[in-house]
Length: 413
Image (tube, rainbow, N blue to C red):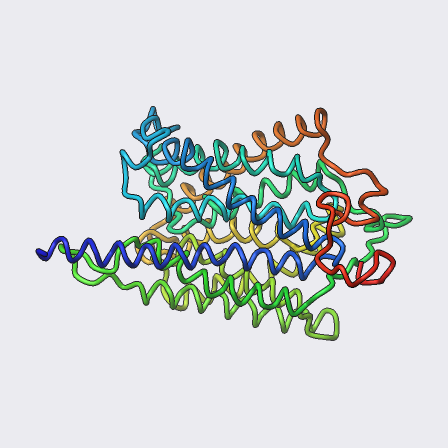
């Protein structure tokens, strides 16, 4: 084995390990959503996250990867590698990008939880992995017009998380709130999740998986030309931002609610992870801390704004975690990037480019998912009937329960 082949083998192994870590995040999302929602819908949550990955893997292999990474057509869409993506890239890289596509798709599950028809959700999951996510991904990662412009999103604050967040915003808005969420006079009623330890386990698993998500996006640990790639640096910025966001969230909720809020602080950690994802390779450690600190404020006030002002029912806080902090993290590159950021004397150019990217992804996702969810609502139906929502989706959609020893009348519903 010559030296170049050894380097390729080492890099391939690292990308494969990172992809497995990102795949494990699918379980993390499942646990978070199960824990933060009611017991009567837990099996439905499991099924949605499972099929996000299964159906998404097929759609992304057959069409999505080619649209995202195929030879570009006027910077908007890839045209090669359809049906046979292995003809344009390695199986390892295809697998790595597949788990990213699944992440974008599954973000919507939590925001639309407890009242969405399963068949409608399956169609959404197929379409976003087949068309919506890959076409948008091509613009920044596949050689499209945003990459030519100089847009920076290293691991996907916008490409992955904001796309999922915008879709979650549109879906939850069209779907409407859960029964009982808003009372007379638009009073906001809390609907607690049934298992906080499950949610916490999911957050810890996501935090672990994020080191594969961000550090794995180097797609190498060794370069023949440049020597060792510092994946440890990316892991450090990732960890610092998450830790700072969680800490700020804890103290902020302690101050505002007189008690440190557990579920909000868990979401704070995720907010920091989302925010640092775009710039984890190019900001300093103190830049990462600043990004995480601001993410902590965004998650607290963002969840309150979505819940109380917009009156959008998001059971797990997905919109605030992935959309608001995805936007913040993408814009933060234009401020904190040590080579092109405003705070490092490089002017407003990068910040302007980042803002264009945020607007482009927002416009694309709102329009396409708006059409998709509206068509589903007008045809097969998007929401379950009220009596089925009250009973719980486990029984009416799947014929079984995650907790069969508990009757429907038990309060853990």
